[in-house]
Length: 428
Image (cartoon, rainbow, N blue to C red):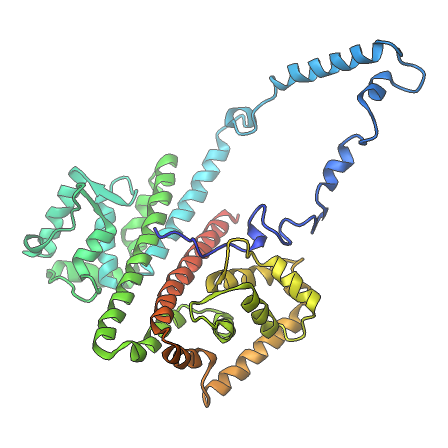
């Protein structure tokens, strides 16, 4: 899985980052206020605690002895405390494990559907065949499982194994290696298959692999197997999405070699724009307008200009507060990090965006609609960047930035959707 070096999570979800998520003044009052309620005053000395009310303690040695006895008693008692992470100490029965198994079944089914949503009907039929030989459903087929799967592949795709094989050098067949073998580098070179496989693909396309087979197998797994399944198929989900990104970029490289970079740049942007949801299109327009270097990474001065475009009524103090809410500690701001901040700022009650409320959001949406209408007649900020990059010799920089932004936005959405799947699975 690709690293997220340039994609930071905004302050609302990162412990230790500057901003409202960890500021001294949070939604529940000043940080440490609860500790302050229960801690003794800093002005009270141990000797005062030991001696009791004024004049009643032993002025020479009684207070020290009594304090020492308290300390020794506390130290001795700590060893007898139960570990809250020890299930046997917390629970008397395994009822919590039974509930967790229900949660894991729900989550596993959701992840399987997230995987199949990325596939065509024939690829989903291939996925169902793969899971049929992935006996522990951990996302990998190896050993005897791999040999049996290869035998089935020979049946539905005669002579294809002779040309190439989905079996990796380590003796493992991953679903991604099977998918690459079946549909080629660009995803368009499908193997010739039998009538039986075509019928399976048709049935899978109508009902879905979950209904046909996968759900029943997930429900039969025990607790530890379900946890392995969640780990394995979450990893598989990321791998499938990464393969799709590689295929998109490979197609663009092929077109670029035929038509030139300038003519291909709108297609690069088109792939990125297909990933936009909600306010992302407008946010990207604003982002592109201030990105003077065409690398889709904003320095602090560019971020300030971006915030003033986003909130045209912002005061200097507002801008400083916005900047404190956005995590710039690790360097320039990527588009995916900007989207992350925006999505969280709208839902965190003590962010400035949330405090300004629906009026600001409505104003931003209104400007986005107006800009879209203007874009039908005049060049948009994104289109102006293509001309600017051509004049300044930064076409390749912008092309590479689009490819990086595509991966980062898709990764951001994948992580977001996985988090939502977990939250939805926990709902009673």
